Length: 302
Image (cartoon, rainbow, N blue to C red):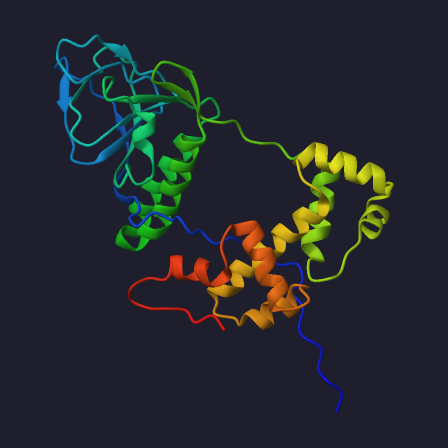
């Protein structure tokens, strides 16, 4: 009976997060509100034990932070204010045009998401300008999930919170304590490097040569090498090795044997895999897994 060939890994990709935070943000409240009756009092005070992301779907009037002597500032339409837990702030909506439309998220774990870096202690808040309304729509969707599904809508709403936090973390500063939510990225014509990387990912288990890759892209080997390095800072072969090692990490997390991984990803043997792994990761496969092992359980690497 002929010997069965080892299975190859085709068109696979993924990522292992070795430095994932031990604690994650947790959504507590998502609300969309509309006020049609004028506010009678000037300077309503708020203070919450949670992080608050307060979004203005319409002009919300004025706000001030930390003390009654702080200057009043405008909370214009399409802006979100981020307050850390325990921050006192005041709102004055008497002059805002009605109906006043507002939406907000309250959550725990903002520090674990790295939001401390977006809020200066002296200011007590940060402002996020949202030209396309991307952040506002996520907050409204989280509120809709809760209103529609109640407790059963928690995980869907959590997804919207995570997307909102990702937008905050990718915002760009435009002035003191003010950031802009990034615009929607429109799809572009793939560059040579993008097309080359896609081919490498699809055929990462094969023994590929630069000549074959160049033929696929209809360029010379010289053009491929120079343009690829100019776009990515590395050679196509270095990218191929890196892609293989990334996938090796994912397969190790699933508990696959190193020999099986080496055979499936185009390495000549376990020694070759381990050598390349240490070159890319700076540590051996065993050391990588030992760093990820939780006290409650261990994944055996053979």
